[in-house]
Length: 221
Image (cartoon, rainbow, N blue to C red; front, side, top):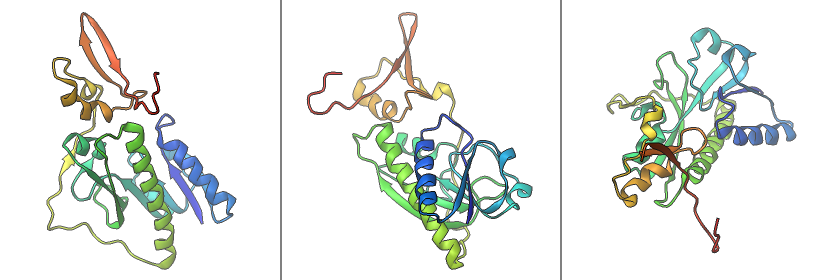
């Protein structure tokens, strides 16, 4: 199959996982796989995966492919919108469902191909959460190939469930209230990516960022 992966941020941590998935399938000589950074690069083919992609792919571009599928970290139709797993964890979620859906003009409204869930340990930091999320997304990508080959069809999102929506996160959403105790702040700090949107607070006329590291085996740094 001719498969394209579109992740328009070179800094996104999912890229390492996508490159590994690409290499694995190419070594097995199963598929020709291209990783793109912008919709203008999309050549067309059998299958287009939109992974952590902030660009809206219109119908003209989708028509270059037999299937255009989105990986979205919520149990759709609940949690449409931006950074759904981060918002859900901040709300106290202990598990995340990832939906594989058909791309449509209206964001996150397409028919569902498959769903998979993973648990969120209360001590997991952002990189551990990402590992669970990305592993789940890659499993769904493998599943998508099998579903497409078998001729399966996606199912419309349930109309009996009222959709919910998350807004796009901004840098201000990473600000920490330094007057609050750490045990109250931990859940918010742990989901912040220390490289792209670190948790921060203001104190004594300065701005400070926070990076959490889980210490193991008597590590001191």
